[in-house]
Picture (tube, rainbow, N blue to C red):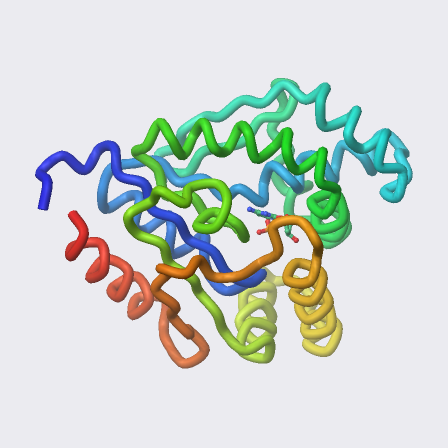
Length: 227
Ligand code: DC
């Protein structure tokens, strides 16, 4: 509709390993706007907590660590925002299984979450961004005119992850990956604060039997109806 797409906000939510980042990045590139994988911020906090030897169950210490973080965001050529924690980019450390597990745990602590979501709400309000996470459509950007919720069977996601790891020349244990995906789903969708769920007006796409290109096409199709 409007010619100016520089301020649009698109919310993408869904389970772990469903392809939210690949889809979000492609859509952001198409519109020349930024892409933020919001889980990166929880991963940064999770990593910091592990690195400082803080007990993940010590909520007060986790909240203190969250408060002390100085966040930075750097736009990359592929449209994604690189998240800096205290001036440092954590790179491959962000992708470690233990960082992901710690992220999932710290993200369930309400006050630690509040600190991070405040920052994310500011980014969403400024616009010109595709944000990907678990609560973007429900909590961070309820005002976003386009909300997408991606889902896929855990088995389909585990298979994709195995393929990805093998392509990178890494070892992959399907059973272990499947178990990890299932337990992450369970924790993310049953927690008390901002559990993973689609916004009422979200477009739900089951990607189990879709290629990445097909999913991107569906999202762009939906976006073209809004803007
Ligand atoms: O998307 P991810 O795997 O990088 O996210 C890591 C963890 O952070 C995930 O288990 C749940 C949490 N998370 C969240 O609670 N809310 C978000 N918007 C994004 C991630």
